[in-house]
Amino acid sequence: MKVERLTGVLGAELTDVNVTQLTDTQFQELRELACEYGVVFLPHQVMTVQQQVEFSHRFGPAAESPFIEPSPDHPEVIKVLKEASDGKAFNFGGAWHSDFSFLATPPSFTILYALDIPPYGGDTLWSCMAAAYEALSEQQKEQFATLHAVHTARDAYSPKMQPIHSGLSSMNIVCDDSANEAQVHPLITTHPETGKKILFYNRAYVRDLVGVSDDEKLRLMEWLHLHTTDAKFSVRHKWSVGDLAVWDNRSTQHYALNDYAGFRRELHRTTVAGSRPLP
Ligand code: SIN
Image (tube, rainbow, N blue to C red; front, side, top):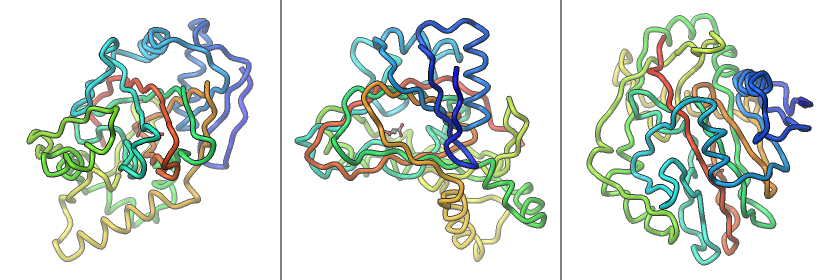
């Protein structure tokens, strides 16, 4: 497997590899690279939906996928699909987020395979929350270690949000009141595989901070969003058909751009069960 790093912070392209034929040693190397680089891209993969499910199982059991109806034949697969006729409708993943961070145990890895890509646009960005932690001052590291963040899907999937999701003709996203539930996670987590400290924050799902005065809260939340998504911690991927991306959902957040109105975009997504984020 050839490894080419893409930025000084995160992202690597892996070539000379067929993910459907990895030995256990090669798979372990790939898993470690995904943890080390945050996101890895494997171009020119040819895989059926079932092969993607099997590849995903090598990382661990499937994670739950609340609110999003899976592919009818493959309950562990989400078709991330925007039809040309959906125009400017809000796209799935179109805000900075870590997948399902509002769950008690958010997914560990996400795997996304490109089947149909617009001639331009539809890129995805990732940012590295380990680098965002490292860039904090010693004083911030100390202060943030005492804080917790309240993660909830209420501004993404509660019933009031149904109209924005109904604009996607081919994804069935079903909002309900369970989105109002919340999970409290430490603001600084320790990655369970690399041991690195992570600034575990994303604006899509964090709605409150515990341990900060009301006066300071909104300012700090805005600062955390701007800091964790700073261009200097990011990588941007322009998709081609056959690209497979594997990202570490515990140390990154991502954002799918919505700049391809009038074109079709389809990717298949699987997610791997994770553990409770710990300090
Ligand atoms: C997602 O947020 O999982 C979707 C990312 C993408 O469509 O690029």
